[in-house]
Amino acid sequence: MDGLQRATNQATERTLTVNDYRVVETPAQGCCGALHAHAGDLETARALARANISAFEATPAASIAVNAAGCGAMLKDYAHLLHDDAGWQRRAAAVSARTRDATELLAAQGPKPARLAAPVTITYDAPCHLQHAQRLTAPPLTIIQSIGNVTYVPLEDSDQCCGSAGIYNLIEPDVSDAVLAPKLRHIAATGATLVVTGNPGCLMQIGAGLLRTGSGTRVIHPIDLLDAAYAAEAQT
Image (cartoon, rainbow, N blue to C red; front, side, top):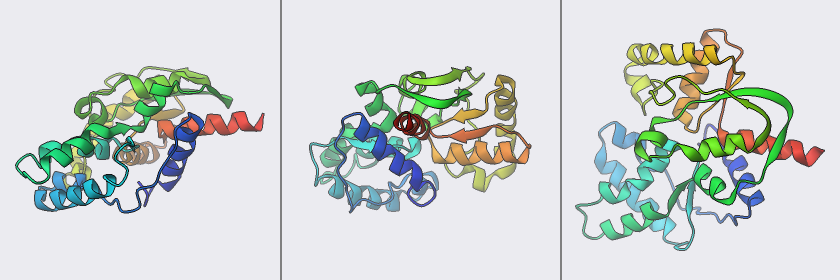
């Protein structure tokens, strides 16, 4: 996220602050290891998990906010990843228990309502790692429904994979595109100008598909949508 979508990281900090969270940095954290685990390199994934556990132990009372569904699922799975490691399993479980998707934290506080500068029609696609792995469905919709000037249109088969699936779109691009095709048709049927989804892989996969098909619809992270509404409110 920080390499490709740093603006979303910055928006996450701003929106959490608006909703009365105090954001503290964890400079020693690194990659969560999800992509390594997807590729079958579990030893590297475990090494990265141990490094992150040590880093997050510096702020033991803080929730761990994650704005990438795949990373959040991985952090919440650290206890399982290290379940055979007697020296780390309990520490891993403590970090997993503190991990929250950023939309979870924002929904828990409200969030504070805001209004976009102009009306927009949106639809929401649920990242697999958020809905199926983390069992989270309500928080992103709570964010969307808190924003004024938004018309929300449900997306058919929103719970179905977009074809990104970690690194699947890199290793099986043809099958990945075939999985994406019905998703793009369903998005077009909504008439939405924005597709909201909360995982970088989904953002890139769906976004690339929309561009290739010449669609005028674009993708956006729910945090960026909320941040845009707060910015619009600040200018009124």
